[in-house]
Length: 71
Image (cartoon, rainbow, N blue to C red):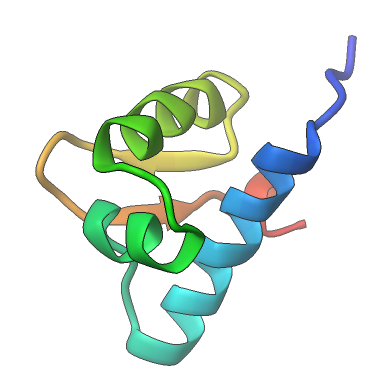
């Protein structure tokens, strides 16, 4: 069963893609700054995106889109 992405999840994916393209990497603090949200909010969203198989993120490390997340 395919889950539907919320507009917020799409915003996170687009922001991560923009950061990866522009800076070569995406960090929680950069995502938070670009979206105007708190770092804990980003962490919560990343957990959801990771559950969906859209990003890879280890605590205190870079955030990367998976092949599925890039699509």
